[in-house]
Image (cartoon, rainbow, N blue to C red; front, side):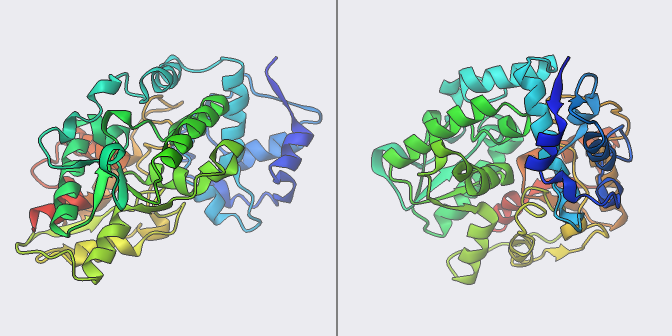
Amino acid sequence: MLQIESRTFAKERGLFACVQCGKCTGGCPMAMKTKLNPRAIIYRVLIAGNGFNLEGRDELWDCTTCSTCYSRCPKQVNPMEAIVAMRSAIVEKGKIHPNVKTALESTFRNGNPLKLPREDRGLWAKDLQVKAFAETGAEYLFYVGCTPSYDPHGQKVARALVSLLQSAGVDFGILGNDENCCSSEVRRLGEVGLFEAMVEENAEMFKELNVQKMFTVSPHCFNVFKNDYHTIEAGATFGAQVQHYTQMLADLLKDGRLKFNGSFAKKVTYHDPCYLGKHNGIFDEPREVLTGIPGVELIEMDRSREKSLCCEGGGGRMWVEGTNPGTRLAQLRVKEALETGAEVLATACPFCLLTLDEAVKHLNAEEKIRVLDVAEIAAQAL
């Protein structure tokens, strides 16, 4: 039987502080469409006695790790991390969904969860004049990430960001085919051993290359480098300054280094990615970039900033279906964007970009609204 020692687990995860107020479940975007119930999970652990059975707990894979539960808890209990820890116990026994297994194995073998070759990782930049960080060094390492390196729309974002930074005179380089997965989703899926191995590999490479400053496309990459690497011994030496690219662009605008000669005359609404907003409190910088672009009329959705609705792409949800696929959260989000009258739904996360774009197509709303990354919009106004 697959069990965790419930009393020890509850103590280690601070679950005894839970007062069963239900704010976690009330705020959980997946609780309204699946069997996931963070409050009930904690309650069952607390009353389980010596052992809590994880067999058949398929709802644990419904969690998107958006952190809404943690952000709303008055006692600072973190149901999200408890769920990730339960996933770890399941993964350790090898009882995981085939798609999750495939993603993890591909990350180990190919350095990405997409089952794509390592030697193709840098192809997106083959015709661009971008420095190879390992050969020449630079002030900044541009950590591209898996999705922007391989996905066609993600590649457009990476190329747009290159044009923006080059126009602002930023000294940066990329790792190309030597870049490895950041391992954010590996951690959220519960594969602790693989996460630690990849942190050790990446941290050692960054140290050898003397990386002092770096920026990322994905909030997930940004978050894992900023908040997770130092939590384990292998990543303790990783001390580079990490920024999300929207922070970079906002600073460049303030300094007058990034200038726009064109315009983007459209109504735009912005979707806050969970790993940029809820996890790291970065709400203003993407909006500063958008409002700094000539012609942009920024319209806010009702659920914005801390209240932003998760797109359902995080926590490994890009590779595994939940207990009730139903109406995806991204479709609800697109409907909210349409209600504002916006012509463009902007975001600053590769996962959000893909899920929202797919939702627009599913709703047959391509003629009403487009999904673009903040970098794409800014590049069109250069």
